[in-house]
Image (cartoon, rainbow, N blue to C red; front, side, top):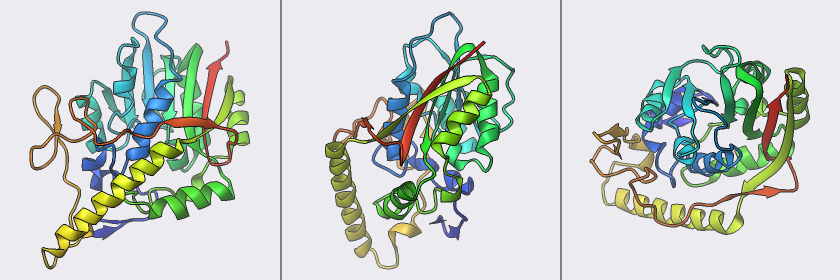
Length: 289
């Protein structure tokens, strides 16, 4: 990935610091994470007891938080990237700086563990699965989504997706994609019977998003053409800041689109089920015992 004047290897965690201002822009670099967070939250039922805990592995800037509002959980987020955790905390997440393969939380503490779009970023996804299952109390729920280790997934998620407007180059390392059958077997080994289903963005919403991004990219290039010596890639992402009251703002002080108090031009695509798990899939399972 080339950003902020440097080139980073694929899947390098420093990318998330360079893109810190993108988290709460629903039409920005992490657009699909917004769509997936809503779909993941739909798998989580209301809390069944007072004080229920949801542990969000690889929580990023807390994109799951708005979709859990009112469900009755204390939301604890674990992530390596401090700049993302600061934004998660501003959205009510209890932020824990830690590695998802060695989570600094007690065995059986969680009623729900969410592992959204994280397993395909972990060099040893089996250790991350072991940790997720360890954190669950008996009867606790595991929800996750990730990319399958298939040729089709590598084609669509890397070769095609990384050519779309605003999608970060090098955000995934296809060597880390997670074989669906191996994931089910690994969860079973740790006492969680995982059921999978394929998912994808709905076509009408996706086409609308692409059209908006192409228009925005065209406007940015035209603006740069009026300022010699400046290119889109020369401009680092503006870091988000948090004002009193929790409003996330960009460098110029304008509300960042995607925050609950902001407006979004155009409806976001919805994640819908599909018959195949060959590319992107969700998992849901309960820990026995």
